[in-house]
Length: 448
Image (cartoon, rainbow, N blue to C red):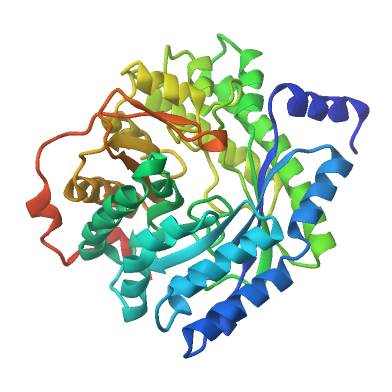
């Protein structure tokens, strides 16, 4: 039974600790929109998205007003477009962007291809079209899965994605290469992720589903302030209890949105998603544990504890936990990460080590503008290897800032924040990434 103390505690978490629902994401299956004519497919896509999601933005606003819980984003994730595009996929990209704008949606994901084991012709066409698609649209997001624990790593796809990131940067250089922030390269991509830019509605998903992503780094930090000097056992228990409360709130919103929309509830994603606002930082949770700054020795251990405790607390609060779930470490979107990177204490190699234990991977990292496609491909390969071997989702979302060098800063604004440009290892890896073929799946993938 909910008592007045719990209600007041939730109000304080919302008002003082920046607790919010980061996103309600409506997953929509588009496989029935496919036809031999691309323009007809695009029209069917537009019509279905507008029909199914017509009340999403309004419902989110109504729940926010009624419950007093901030809902930052209303988003849509659709089936990977490569599965339905029989010809030029660009008309579908335009149709999706137009539908999102018409509906008042913040972002729409699913301009995606799953190529961990090889390419179909449709997937090659979609990947080749990504630079133009993201440059010509405002709300569309794209993702490509290049590896998995079961399949290994498609190195032809890895190298091509390094080239694609460079092409996007060149096309959007007048806007600090911002279009790169709308592309994620995955290993072990999940089908029910509500967070952008990597969200899509997977083949195993229902016709449509309501997925919710919660946040609350500030709430976790405030809770840890009450146990300063205590042992790690106490720290872990405190995070678990806090994650339980956050997840309960997320499930409440998800169930309410599901009921009002008449669409099944999918999952709650427990990921602690930071913002550039002070008091809403995952990095500051780590410093509250006793580190001077993110990147200090001990950072990976602290992040491992945080990630594990968040998941343990969350799964006790809901039977439908999914997505990525854990702690995000996007550099440009976390004020603590921004400060550590700007001070030179958080480097790319340390971030890579941290991705072994966090929710996703190298996220929203600005690179020098002269970083080559081969170097970007090498970074993608390394991150994919971490995901493949550890049977976890990893991702790369990097922004080569054309015309800028390490130490400069790119400003994106809003939730995307600002990114200090990080130094990149200059040793050549081109011969490695150009070998092609597939890095085989690890032995422990054979579990049948």
